[in-house]
Length: 360
Image 1 (tube, rainbow, N blue to C red):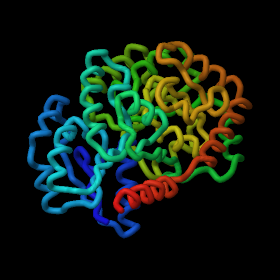
Image 2 (image 1 turned 90 degrees about the vertical axis):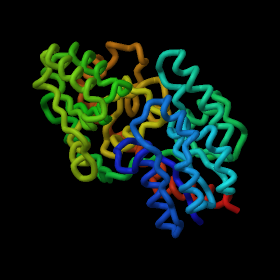
Image 3 (image 1 turned 180 degrees about the vertical axis):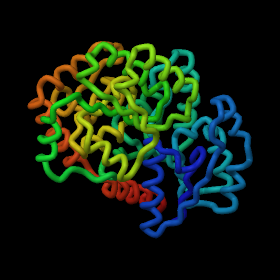
């Protein structure tokens, strides 16, 4: 089977969606299928992406290598909602949307989401099938106007970096004296909410916590400078360290040493990061909006905070700092949550079977 995958840019960028796409490509190739990457130009405004519907680049690529199935990363939808109708003259295989998120369901100005919803609805009605990364994404797509096409939910996994094999390490880590080691694991972008996290931590005694920020510092330079200025203004430079992009063994080592994963102000369409943290026994603090609630059980393996909650994070950090037995118990539950979740191989095989049924 020849599969085409339409993405923006390449598969090297370390984001949750790109990671998912990359693992899927590797898995399909391991099963003997040919996968062609059909790349659209990255870094363009939404308006310029819309203009991509009138470009002939994708059609030329499809003519050279007509696929049996055309997968499309849903984030490419602005360039595809009209083009999908044109490409059927070139490629007769089914078009399958791989949806990591629905843009119009994210928190932003109402007029922007109105525009996004119009375009996304047109796109969702132009495809033959959908693969959703979560129930939250499926429900958002349905609300946006997705038709009753064949679809599956194939949730990401958290076993890519390995995991703890014993709860003894959790107990030893939880009961170490000293500040809680907090981890913000996301690229430093406005919608991930690091600025709000810094403000929340400024209200907590500096002896209680240390924060490591792991993620790209080059995707939005003005925002990174704004974060640096805010940290300096709050006098927190000794408590917050930026480690840049980390992956593989270096990221696993950071996870092993941390106590708590903190992304309370980020609206996640799934949140691979939560499961990867739980693989190492890290309770997670996430937003009560989005798909974090599909993984985090409030007060058991983590905490869910409302987007407007500016003081909840401080309470969580202070409570777990003071009660290491509770931290230990929650960390054990976090590891148990990871162990109950399917691994990447299970998820990719689910997609593989689904695609084969579509290609018949």
